[in-house]
Structures are given as C-alpha cells and as structure tokens.
Length: 590
Ligand SMILES: Cc1cc2nc3c(=O)[nH]c(=O)nc-3n(C[C@H](O)[C@H](O)[C@H](O)COP(=O)(O)OP(=O)(O)OC[C@H]3O[C@@H](n4cnc5c(N)ncnc54)[C@H](O)[C@@H]3O)c2cc1C
Ligand SMILES: *[C@@H]1O[C@H](CO)[C@@H](O)[C@H](O)[C@H]1NC(C)=O
Ligand SMILES: *[C@@H]1O[C@H](CO)[C@@H](O)[C@H](O)[C@H]1NC(C)=O
Ligand SMILES: *[C@@H]1O[C@H](CO)[C@@H](O)[C@H](O)[C@H]1NC(C)=O
Ligand SMILES: *[C@@H]1O[C@H](CO)[C@@H](O)[C@H](O)[C@H]1NC(C)=O
Image (cartoon, rainbow, N blue to C red; front, side, top):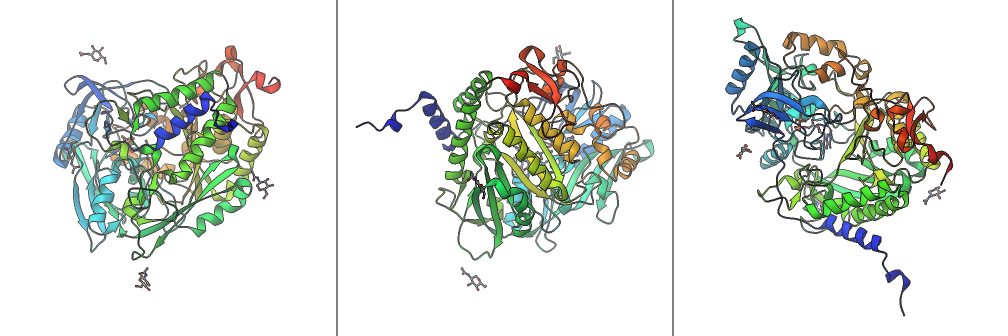
C-alpha cells in the first residue's frame, strides 16, 4: 500500500534539496573580492561593500587607493592627503557595512586600505590585553588571544569584521552582564592618526587611553576622526560556555525577555512570529574542567554551493512574483526545523551535532565565518551574499529599543502578526528576528540605554522598483522601532530612513562634534553621508518615485511606492502615524 505522504509534491522536493544544501559542509570556497576596483594601478577606483550594493545602489568613486603596511606609511598617507586637501576614507579588507560609510567625500578622494595593517603587535597575559593593528580581523584577535589563554568575552557573531571597522560602527554581541556586549567598551588603548597643519608635519598621532575623555568619541567614531592605527583591548582568562537552544511558544515573549537577559550571560533570542515560536539561547560560563570541545560554524556563514544559492534565490523570487505567501511559510518552517535539528551549525566536538548542551571554549563558540576560509577556488562556492554569484540579496533593519519600551514594542509586533499571520514568513527565511542584548555605553555614539537590538533581514528585489510581499508590515515595524519607540539604528547596517534625524537621539552628539572639530577641522574624513547622519549638512532621505520601497524615504504620496503595481501610501495598521506602501488588493481581495 502507498503511504500518501510519500507522494512528493515537486515543491517539497526542492525544499528538501534546499535544506540539504544548507547543511552540506563545503570545504572549498572562494574568498570575497577586494571591495575596491581600480582601472589603472591603484587609481581611478570604485568602492562598494561586501554585498555589492549600498542602500541607494550607487557606486562610489575614489581617485586612488593606498595600502600602507606600517603605521609610518599610514602617517605619510594621511599627511600627503592633508597637503593635497583631498578627502579620505578608510576601507577594510571586506567592507561589510551596508550604508555608504566607506565613500570618501566628493569624486576624487583617497582610500586608505587597512588590508595590510593586519599584525598582532602584542598579547600580554599579565595585563590581559591584546594590541593589534586596525585591519586585524575579529577571527585573528580571537585566535591570538586564545593562544595566550585569553578571550574577548563579547563580540559580533561574524568573525570577518576588522577591529577598526567594527569599533567605528559600534558593533556588538549579546549580553546584559558586565560592561555589556559592545566591543568598544573593552577598548583600553587607541592610536589614531588625524590630519594636521605644517607645524605638525601634516599628520598627528594621538595615543588615547581611558583617562582621556576623547576616548568616548574615538571608540565609536564612524571613521570621521582620522585613521585608527592601533587598538588595545582588555581580555579575560579563556573560559568555557554551555549553550542550549530552547524553542518555546512566543506568547509570553514580551514578559520573559528582560528576565531572560538577566538570567543568562550570553542570552539571545531568535523570534519567528509567524511560527509562534521563539528560540531562547541559554548560554552561560561553566568551569573549564567541564569536558566538551564544541564548535560554532553557523550555517548561514558557511561556504555554500553557488548552484544551491541560485536555486534558493530563484525559489524566493518565484514566491515573490506570484505573491505566494503560503510557499514562503512552508519554506520558512522547513528552514527553521532544519536549522534547529542541526544545532544551527554548532557541533559538540567539531564534527557532529549530537544534542545540547554544546560545551566549548569561548574562542570556538562565540563567532564564526567559515566561508572566508579560502582556497582560491573558482566560483563553486561562496559566502551566501557574495555579489559575484546569484544568491542572497536582502535589506537589513537593525535597531535597538530601550529595555523600558521593549515589552510594548513586542506586543505591537504581535498585533501586526495577528492581523497578517503570514507576514513574517519572509523574515523567517533569514532566521527570524534576532534579539540581542546591549548596554548603555560611555561612548558618545554608543547606546544611550540598556536595550534590545533587533536584527531583521528580508528580501530585496534586484529591481529597486519592485515591491515585496508584506512590504507594508516590514515598513511599519521599521517605523515603530525608529519613531514610536525611538530606537537607535546600528551604524553599520540599515536603510537610509533609519538615519533620518538620528543624531538628535544622542545626548552627547555635541561633545562628539567638538572632538571631530578638534581632530579634523577641515573635514578631510567627512563625506556627504557622514555629514548627513551627523546633522552637519543635508539629509539622508532621497525622495523620488519608488523611494519608500528601498527605504530611501518614508512615503508621503503613492508615487513613493509602486502605484502601477497596486502599492500605495497608507497609514500603518497598528501604528497609525506610520506611512507604508500597502498593496491595495490586500485590503479587500484574496
Ligand atoms: C555577515 C555579517 C555579520 C555581522 N554580524 C554582526 C554582529 O553580530 N554584530 C554587529 O554589531 N554587527 C555585525 N555586522 C555588522 C558589522 O559590525 C559592521 O558592518 C562593521 O562595521 C563592519 O566592519 P568592517 O571591518 O567590515 O568595517 P567597514 O564596514 O569596512 O568600515 C566601517 C566604517 O569604519 C571605518 N573604518 C574602518 N576601519 C577604520 C580605521 N582603522 N580607522 C578609522 N575608520 C575606520 C570605515 O571607513 C567605515 O566608515 C555584521 C556584518 C556582516 C556582513
Ligand atoms: C576610469 O574608470 C572609468 C570606469 O570606472 C572609465 O570609464 C574611465 O575610462 C577610467 N579613466 C581612466 C583614465 O582610465
Ligand atoms: C596579512 O595580509 C596579507 C595579505 O592579505 C597576508 O598575506 C598575510 O598572511 C596576513 N598576515 C596576517 C598576520 O594575517
Ligand atoms: C501558546 O500558548 C498560549 C497560552 O499559553 C496558547 O493559548 C496558544 O495556543 C499556544 N500557541 C501554540 C502555537 O502552541
Ligand atoms: C572541576 O573542578 C572543581 C574544583 O576545582 C571540582 O570541584 C569539580 O568536581 C571538577 N569537575 C569536574 C567535572 O571535574
């Protein structure tokens, strides 16, 4: 007799295949390209980010790129730029930030790459510090510290970031304990090279420690104070953690969220609203004699077969173009259950996932990014977002909401979910809404209050004028977070509108600008974008047809959406002050 469930629908087989591809461990990979491309040798260059697209999809230009290998060469580059009165920006090995932070002002700026400033200078077990050049990646810091029996306690989850870049944008992991999860709150020393006048040889090196109040400006600086050359971080003795992911009904999430952060040192929560599910990460230190050698190799950061990436993308494009919300929900459930049954890429021993808890050393569980481990192989595999292959292409909305307001925010999102139960399936394809804990910082451009940082990735069409499924719901969440709850955008992620008027949300904005005036009075390291976000000149909004679809504006008239495709500008459904692109037919039809 035939079991009817064995009769596979073709879509189900594709999904199966998709999930299989996700968990296949691939050894070969091609490393990401240099984000800078020049038509002449190191001259006449374009610069982009690791996704190959800024929020406004423009390409930035620079007249030249230089690759200093020592601090001395770096100082010389800054001095030459200040003599030539050229605009300057620092570019890193991969350039992971989404907004246009890396673009030098004007058209003929200079890029200073930190690609070769990648040396660890000193690891000191007695002071428990590490000193590194600013182009050193998080991966390298973690490895070098561990060799000396030390660890950075809280870091971003992706190890491809450089210390200079991640500090400049306030990057973080997740904790409410100690000084919190932002790496900049563990900085104890910083050397920064800024432009200067002829008396000082056109470049000045400042050596800051925490006794300088300037440190509060320099440790999160958006790159506008000069080039960070050397960073010293405070470490801890290497420790072990015990990690368990627990999936629960999300009905009491709003009530649990603060307690949970207080209970577990490395807590975070992945939230899947359409699946009524929240995955709680119960993650704490354990004594180092507890046995176990767990490893984090997060599936989303692994090398993935290019054919699989293309297949997954095509499936999603198909679901978008046919408004197949049910298809997305089916895919999302399969992806979530696959991720969960494979421990999200954690293994108990570096080989296999056999169940929780994962017990392992901090240096092997805190961060990952194996798609960067490179054999210079062809484009058979890549990081999932590598722009050279057809693969992931998404918007990322990353905003922190004060703990005092997070309960109401969650409840508002749940109200939206009740009105549109399938609206979040698209987000769940990208592993849901990641909620991470961050603490108030003394950094002028750091977090103002203890907060939850929500991180949402969702489909971005290759065509900027094509709206996406549940466009309105995601726009409403973005505006809820930013406007109703006054959330702070991550400086290195987000779409333009997240930064509209952002500087007014920072109590110490004036203090920051004073230091900027002192370090770089001519604005050599400033650009159109940094002037806009710092409230110095101009505005991040780009108003034109279809602008709301890409988050370049909040719609105020239908033409900002896609009226010819049935998307018009309407108030939000839970947050009436929101203005979102709503599909007319979704108001009645279907
Ligand atoms: C896959 C992935 C995962 C991520 N995960 C996290 C996460 O878990 N948590 C989190 O908070 N963020 C995360 N991010 C975002 C990330 O933290 C930021 O985008 C970060 O700024 C990128 O670092 P980068 O080295 O690529 O810097 P870039 O994006 O290249 O540079 C950022 C800015 O800093 C400036 N800058 C860089 N180096 C220097 C220097 N030496 N001196 C002066 N200015 C400098 C640049 O000019 C630019 O303005 C993630 C990003 C990706 C792509
Ligand atoms: C500079 O680069 C652009 C394209 O990026 C190209 O069209 C132009 O010819 C180049 N100029 C020179 C002098 O090579
Ligand atoms: C520094 O970068 C260069 C060029 O990418 C590389 O060859 C070298 O191995 C790196 N050194 C370290 C210490 O990572
Ligand atoms: C979640 O729990 C609530 C109450 O505890 C219950 O009403 C609801 O049906 C549950 N939902 C699911 C999907 O289990
Ligand atoms: C670990 O060490 C502590 C004290 O040093 C001891 O009490 C405990 O029994 C040890 N645990 C294991 C699993 O060896």
